[in-house]
Image (cartoon, rainbow, N blue to C red; front, side, top):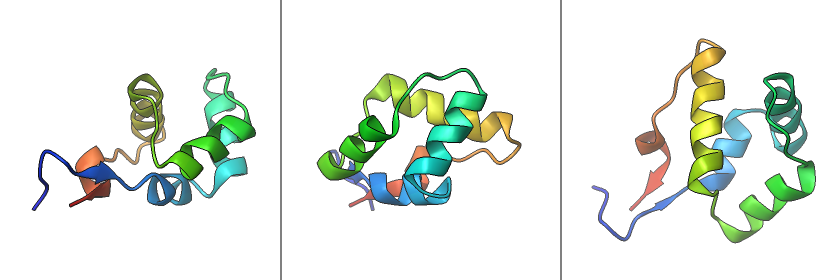
Length: 75
C-alpha cells in the first residue's frame, strides 16, 4: 500500500511510452516542447515535475490509453 512517503516510478512511466526518445516524439506531436535531455534527467533524478506529469497523463488520455499515476507508485 502506498504511503505519504511513496515515490513515482519514473523509469516505468518513461518505459510505458517506449523510452526517452519515443516519449519525446509523442509529447512533441501533441505540442509539448520538451527535449530528450530533460526526460533523461527526470529518470536520473527519479522525479517528474508535477506540471510535466500532468502533460504526460493527458498524452496517455489523448492517445486513448489513459493511465493513473497510482499505477506507478512505489511504496
